[in-house]
Image (cartoon, rainbow, N blue to C red):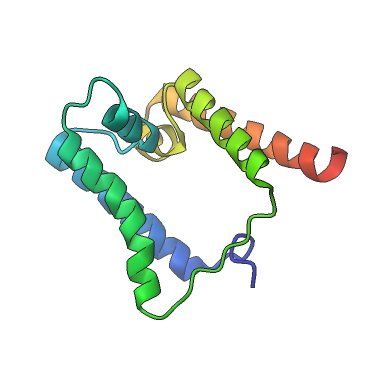
Length: 141
């Protein structure tokens, strides 16, 4: 089964709830927005204050799937792209997050939940750009 295209409402609800709880916890405990690009960029950037919670957050993103796999359920993912395409895509996403002052987690999850106009505009821009890119890749190229 291709999990990237199969909607499963129960797991989506649980995953969304966990993301919401994680962002709420980070805001309540640290007063920070759970934007992955900002957390990662500041962790490895020159202004590295608050490195411990940032490192813990990133490690949680890496460790959580390993815990899931330890329960005996494999994570099946296939990415039909070459390594150069993936590297280019990663660099473009990194440039985009710098130009947009954040990523979908910061603007989409945290910005919209705080009724941020900037977060809403950024999220709409991300979604429209993604839809256009998918259309071009699947139907034009």
